Amino acid sequence: MRATLCLIVLLALSGAACGPNIDLKASLQVADVSTGWADLGVVNGQNKMVPSITFTLKNVGSQPITTLQANVIFRRVGEDEEWGAGFLKITGSDGLAAGASSKTQTVNSTLGYTSSETRAQMMANKQWVDARVQVFAKYGSTQWTLLGEFPVERRLIQK
Image 1 (cartoon, rainbow, N blue to C red):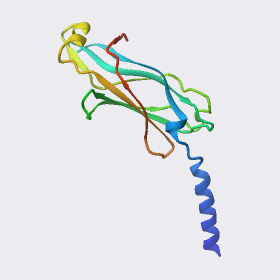
Image 2 (spheres, rainbow, N blue to C red; image 1 turned 30 degrees about the vertical axis):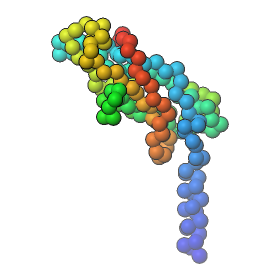
Image 3 (cartoon, rainbow, N blue to C red; image 1 turned 180 degrees about the vertical axis):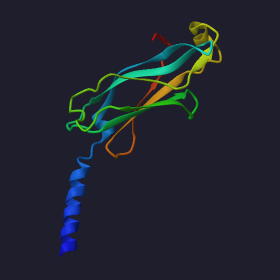
């Protein structure tokens, strides 16, 4: 009898802790997207530029999304290898209400290009390889969900 009671309490608690199952692909939208190349200035005597993305996340679903996180991955076009990444805590336990948008988020890649050429010359160089960026999200202990992939525009973003 005691074991049955413990099992019932455990099942009730685990069901309450899980909360609603939310389809992030349908409920969350990457909005206000802007991409480009962030000018990091002169590093070790060379001009440095890295791919960058600025965006918001909009809850287009009917339920709040709690403990929302984003992972942004940069890759060079034609390559699968990660070229840089950024992890973001979008909300805490207060969550992102239905219909609400997050604060504006900006992520710069950890890797990019360095050269003694001017930034305009760097972007025009025949060895330049464009980049793309993927935005993933998750809430709670769910798995990462790809929300969108965007080309990094070949334009300079001043710091």
